[in-house]
Figure 1 (cartoon, rainbow, N blue to C red):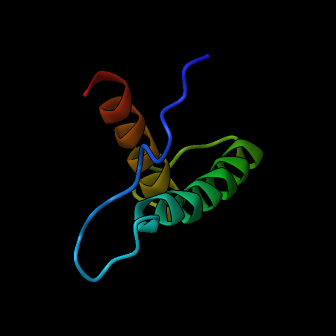
Figure 2: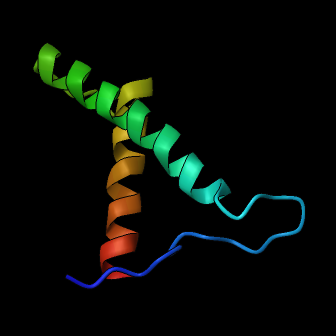
Length: 67
């Protein structure tokens, strides 16, 4: 298995090198909660807060996979 160390590290003045990784962690937590709620409700409303989070997750994954 190949692993690149510090893949999400950034070099931006005024920000810590791991700022992006921490933001991904916060977003991932919110996305997991949103997915749980949507699965529990058995519906999907793309205009709700949870729906928007899930659509953002899909966009992020698409960019990371195909970008």
